[in-house]
Image (tube, rainbow, N blue to C red; front, side, top):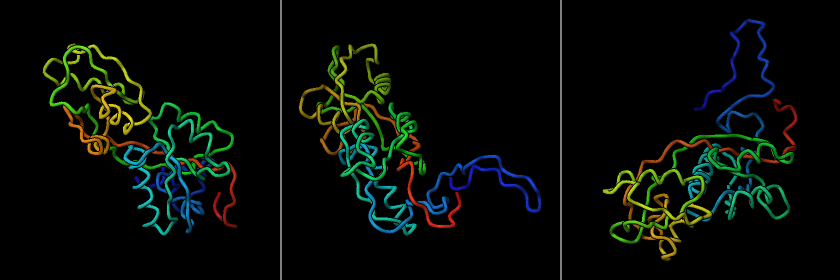
Amino acid sequence: MTESLLHTPAAGTAEVDPTPFPLLWEPDRIPGSPLLRPGTMRIGTLGPGGTTSMVALERLGHRLAHLGGPDVRPVPCDSFEELLAAVGRRGGPSYALVPGAAECATRFFWSPELRLEASFSTPTPEYGIASRAPRLPEGRLRLATLHETQRLAELLDGTAGGRDGYDIDWVPAESTMHAAQLAAAGRADAAITNEPGRATYRLRFHVSRPGVPMVWMIFGPAAHARPTGAHQ
């Protein structure tokens, strides 16, 4: 979506939009946005490489480069809590990329040190339940997953025995890549992971589903200089 979500009054009318700021999806629609300034920009998100967040950040980097914006330097973080503590700090990333589905996303909105700079939508990779073995073990199943992707255990309904055929022991993971790593190392029987995680650790999907459109938010400093005359 690239159109402004503001209602635009018809030409020649005196109607004034009461919205105090524009609700926009594309960074190039925000006049004077620092996201479009040339140079180098460090943007942090959940790492390591191959996580859905890093895939989205790579796509954002290509988009900003296409618009003549900065060279994006990814800063992978071990958790969104770590990212929240680091963004805008000395040595940390200048901006944070956070998915709308992240459990802690609200904390970025309410941080007095941050503001929502822009948002966009891009599909996630394929997700599924993967393991090293040719089939999932019957009965007890140690399943590695992020809290946010735990509900995808419902994909087990697509297996021969259905979800009721498994007694799931949850193995906490910090990211989709970490979940795949746990399964590859034998610390879990299977993982809820994405296609990059499956491919990196040479797992096989037993059941999977296509990616879904996800809204991503870019948070920056609460106060930053804008070019003189830029629309506020």
